[in-house]
Amino acid sequence: MRVTNSEAEQRLATLAGYLAEDPENVPLLMDCASASLDAGDCDLATELYLRIDALAPLSGVLANAAGIAAMRSGKQETAQGWFGRALEEAPDDVNVRFNLAWSIALAGDFTGAREWLDRNVVLQLPQAAMLDLQLVHELGMFDEAAPLLTQYLEAHPDYAPLNAVASVLAIDLDRADLARTAAQNGGDHPDALTTLGTLDLGDRSLDEARLKFEKALILRPHNPRAEIGLGLVELAGGNKKAAVLRLDKGAEQFEDHLGSWIAAGWAHFLDGDLDTAQARFATALEHDNTFGEAHGSMAVVELLKGNIKEAERRMEVAKRLDRKAFSTALASMLWEQSQGNPDKADQIFRTAVQQRVGVGGTTLLDELIKAMSGTSTLQEI
Image 1 (cartoon, rainbow, N blue to C red):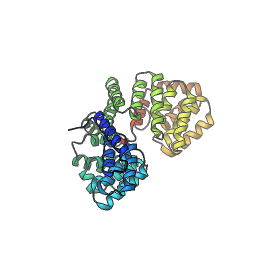
Image 2 (cartoon, one colour):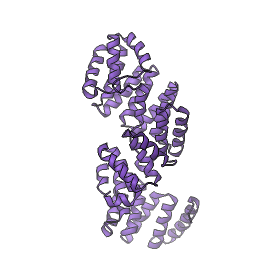
Image 3 (cartoon, rainbow, N blue to C red):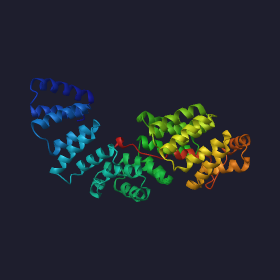
Image 4 (cartoon, rainbow, N blue to C red):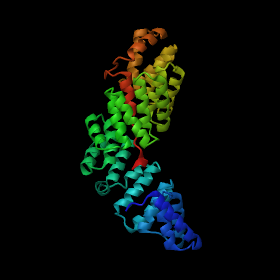
């Protein structure tokens, strides 16, 4: 029978009362630590496991439980120590290996985390396969990600969270059909909803996209992909003020996701705020000065501001880095058709922004939708 949170809290309060009378009772400490985990008080559970360890060193299952408590408390170094102890007793335990990988990933060492996710672990545990997909996605290992995507979905076809994460990766791999199928199998997982919202946005089904992004935000309030999705819905609907608020928030939550800062910049650009647009593009360049799309975007800003020499310089850099980038093509077109005249360039821009530009023949909104591509959320395993 499933214990409710209130029941767990009541049990913890009762046990804590007994423990106050007998603070070195190891079985009682273990019961309290377990009750703390059930009640969601991982800080207390970690403290209690440390007290137990001082009286009777932990190993095996108890060390693993202590590791889970510490990991959920954000104490990853402590967690990894506990998981290491558990593995000393059972080095092939797939659950402990997964827990250790998860903790290492949460500490930011994605490559190190993958070392613990061997074939046996990922094929036995769907959550381990899910973590591995998130890690290869974060690491940008798309050549390796593509076959893993198929392999893991075949091994764990009914695990909704894996399908949801796979749908995000499939979007990045330009496999829209697989993204849709995986997202539909992902149920109400926030990643599945944002993938379906992104596909709706690409089809210009704005009302359907909005509903999915809003639901994703209810389920996971800190959700940069959903924030950006809603920003693009607002932008597509002509609500520029609402768009910039959403896109700025999403970019800030993503922190170093370049496409998000580009999307936010273009929203400010379309709202007539060239200075803020320039600042957003500059933020993208601060994270990666070799990002051609940002240089091309800066070139458009400089051209419309009348800074001709700087616009030329930015265009040359953009062409060298990514000649096929939308912003590079847009900047070149504006330059050629306006002959460097800022007023004429602005008039051409207002028309061109609705048209298909560049090698791929995409619109600005098409390009901004690509900002939905990006990271998964490791803490949602």
